[in-house]
Image 1 (cartoon, rainbow, N blue to C red):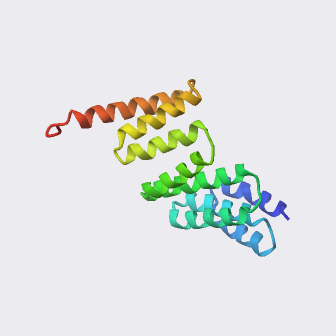
Image 2 (spheres, rainbow, N blue to C red):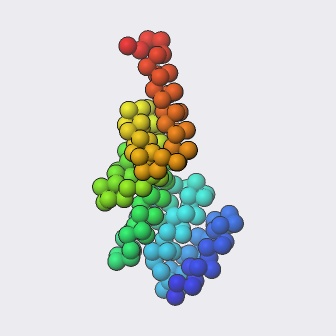
Image 3 (cartoon, helix red, strand yellow):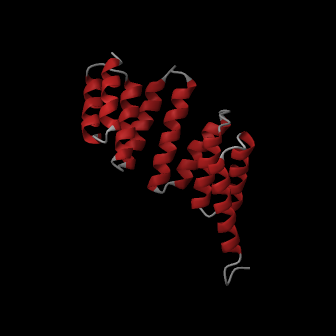
Length: 165
């Protein structure tokens, strides 16, 4: 019965997050795909900036994924990491991104987002390392160069700040 979930998606894409959550809940009750329903609920909660509920929904999607292909897991763990970052749980976000890296996902976006988290934690060296990995994967990624430049500026300003050794 995956068609239930497919018809709900346009509702969420238009910003009707509460309605989407209700529809995903109804899809679950009618036997729709647990993975896609929980994933959709997580995205809707992200849209509402209810990150705790988003994380919980993404976790339920991961548990429901079972034997689904690895791209499904990549997708949901990435969204969960983003929700943790927005919640200010930088360590939890890094755990999720590192789980993906350790699972062999060598994707520029994962390294760039991991670098962003390190930068939020003021760990400029680790951020630069991640941005370099990102650029090694795709040296035409201009956003990667810009974020690396921001990290270099931040590192330079904190190292040159008065009172710093």
